[in-house]
Image (cartoon, rainbow, N blue to C red):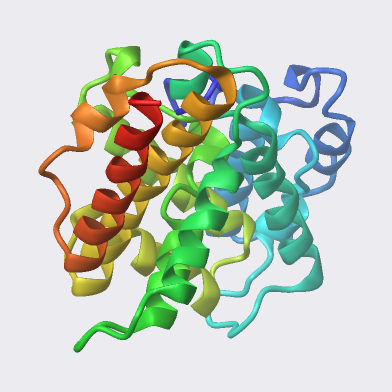
Length: 262
């Protein structure tokens, strides 16, 4: 759910310093530097990021230098790469979830708001045999991270699921390049893919957290604004995979029924 417009393509156009919009002064300056000392792989990575910055307003403050640096085996990102990555993630705080916008909710939650409460769910959930709660928290933190670039793509956008996944995968790869690659970037990719494929007990639980957080937010908006948001409860009914998800959803639905009968 978001108001941002997804980037239709992540390919690199023909580039020159004059190609960059005036507000991308940082990119103009770095592109004008001599590239004779760069390997072709580093330069290609730089061009891809420059292209992406020109296509997406969410990337205006990102430096191309960190993307061209060689840190393929680094256990942690450089300070420059870390701040570039965190700057890019700011749009998760600024982008509102599209489902609420479509229902004309005033001042709706952001993508980051949604992920934060999901992370708290991982923190407070009881111990479950075979489930690593710390990993659940990490998955919750990164599961929508690609929306920093593509925005919140919802069924109302009419974009096929396969295309949505392709765009998000490409965006995730670009974000990990901004981070400088290495172990931390690999971990983010692994966690995101695990959630996307619903391929572990932890992913099963976080998928439930995603739906629980949505219907809890719907209940809160119903109470706050005096409206009925049946769509969110109907779309999640019968789709919870875990006992925690089922029991928490049942509690929310019980409270909603009490509110509706008042």
